[in-house]
Length: 109
Image 1: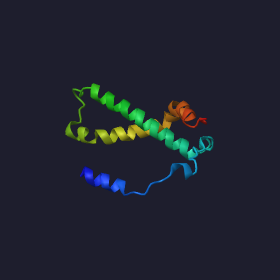
Image 2: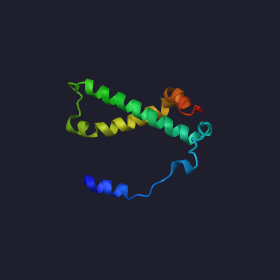
Image 3: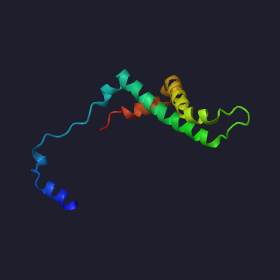
Image 4: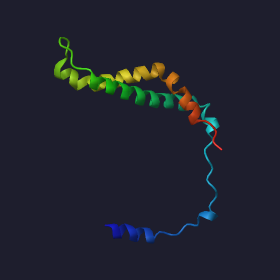
């Protein structure tokens, strides 16, 4: 199998990198003014952070003595957590991810 991979790579045409045009970095300054990108960034950061936070909390909390939902609660707990994380991230992720977004869109030299 390794020989087949090496054979395919050796038959590929050679590319001269010096003749190709230089690759430009994307314009990140224009991305900071894009509200759709900011919303997607906030949603991703918020859902990732708050999802991990809620997942860790669920590991440390034991089942309650009287108001345990049983097997049904265990089945639908993850879906409830997804809804909670979505609502929490929509309401407060922009405050948390604002500085991260500014660093993400900072113009690099």
